[in-house]
Length: 240
Image 1 (cartoon, helix red, strand yellow):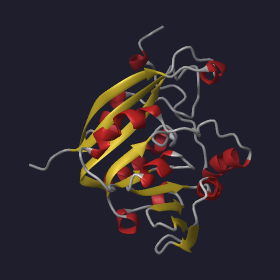
Image 2 (cartoon, rainbow, N blue to C red):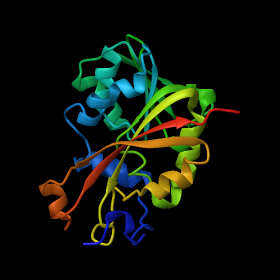
Image 3 (tube, one colour):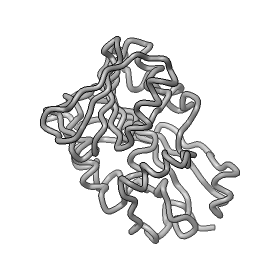
Image 4 (tube, rainbow, N blue to C red):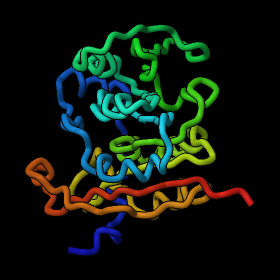
């Protein structure tokens, strides 16, 4: 088999709508949801924290990620965004966390669900409607399934949102997946290092922290015999 980094960009024109994602939740087709803390986050959280405490941490396309409660329990402030209201409400219910809901000023139809403790706020709206004027800027980001889930044609738009939300000392942990895109149409979509360079490189530096063989029976059912998860640390370039 050819080197994964040399795979062609076939099947990168696939498009999923917000309704497609909502239907996945409604039909419980949520194989992308992890029931445990992601091992890469557990191993490299110190890279995000960098000696800091009580960080503002952003979860793009958060779903009901259990990692959010784990970080909130450490004293961090967690903000997530997702188009599926069901997923956000299930997060609070499954963890027995009391919450309130309110409209979001400036985003018609959007809602925010906030924990009683105040350090978890989950926004029900499009990631593309979010801005720093609504949710602020962040010291850390955990992107396990967002960059690889957005439609390839929307990557620049998504990257621009993420970049606009990064504080000057933000430490962004980004997980990408690597496989032969000729064999699987996605999502998750194949993301090469050149994609990271194209969309984040002009404003940020990035380095590979770890590459793990993540091939399971699920990916084999997709027709793959190779599947890697790559964890990058992305940080804003210092202003000269």
